[in-house]
Image (cartoon, rainbow, N blue to C red; front, top):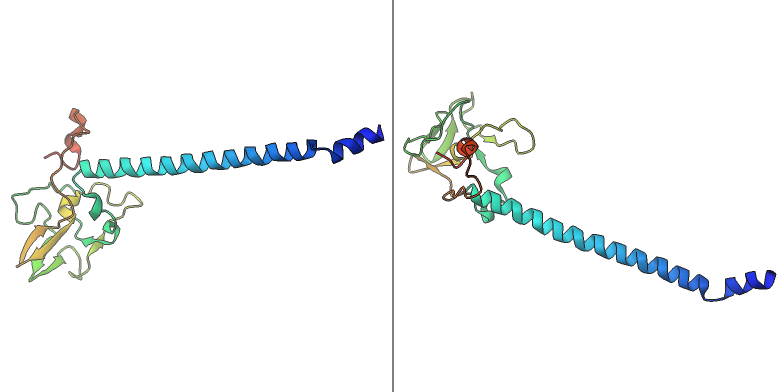
Length: 161
């Protein structure tokens, strides 16, 4: 009995068992790592496709979190023909955007992307700038395609006028 025990300890059984465990671990780590990378790229692709559908170009999305503007009043409606695009709080003082709703007109807002503070803000009315004393839309988004939304519920979406 003792010789059998010694034989098991000294033979390749221990080595084989360890080899199988290490190989299984390597395969498992490799497969999860590979799946994680593929899923990440898939999620980013989906994000950029949806934002492009809403008119936001992928190249303009990266520093959007730091862009400043004037939050329009509650219930404002985007009007591309209006001089203020429907945002009555935004005015121009020369080539500087000012906020008429605050005591300090130079105090501009940043969109709350993390929580729901600005969930009802139409971004076309927020991203404005002044050129030659007139409000114009910042070059952050292009023509909206809205190919992904074909139902009547899509009437409230950003790109449906």
